[in-house]
Length: 143
Image (cartoon, rainbow, N blue to C red; front, side, top):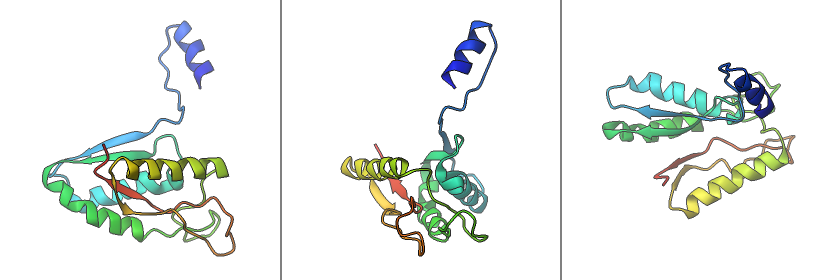
């Protein structure tokens, strides 16, 4: 990605390089609650949250903060399994190193005062006990 960006910018070209960027969202209190929760769950947890455009931060403004328990419930309802299983909502992350990095980020957030609303660490998928699975995880009060 960096090489492509460098070459394109040398020639005055605009370019978007997908270099593991993550998206953020701001949830306003006048948003459609059900649609918003559904969209956040899909954007945050689809592709195990590892696509470049995955949602990693949602800021709930005003009364929309009351929706966090419903987002947690939507995330709890997601099925974690091997990616080839038809009803799986989340598959494994890409590598043991990626799994470890995610686990460390969750731990770091908790140590910094975030509340773990839903903890996907320690999830075990039958038949894949040593797999790189991290279940849906939601933290609130992140600084």
